[in-house]
Length: 203
Image 1 (spheres, helix red, strand yellow):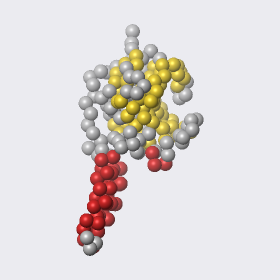
Image 2: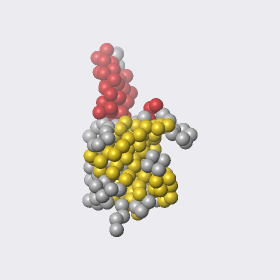
Image 3: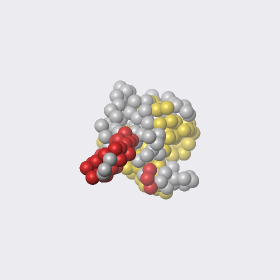
Image 4: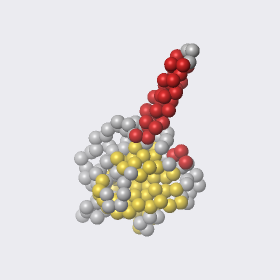
């Protein structure tokens, strides 16, 4: 599959390449443009993933490497003691972001980032049917790496469901309850929709 924005990046070089093949004295002049269009389609690919049958599992929302795991942190959005997992997405994609759990979107925020090198933070609060709160945060690293969130408040998401993307990669945070059991460590490589980051623990 392909993100729709990938077509917006691929169509202009395709149009110019077709014109050059008809008008240019040497058709091979269009080869760089065909390569540019192929690169856009590759970067904005949207691969299918098999979500693990683990209803209490918090799955990775994005492809990338785990930059940090903080077992003791303070959630700045819900103002609670929580655990924070930070994932650095790859610049070569995929850029798709998936819902880490099944639940309802309780709230969304857009706030300035307090850390250097970051513009704004897009946060989505997901609440499960069991009452667990999981926060998904997408960082805006620059104008060209701006996250796109495609869900609204009150909408219900399935575990692993596509809910947005971050152009050209970025940082994604997942905040899980204090009692959740962490399943990853710093340096681990994860795949969106298929790797479990943490397990929600209930008595």
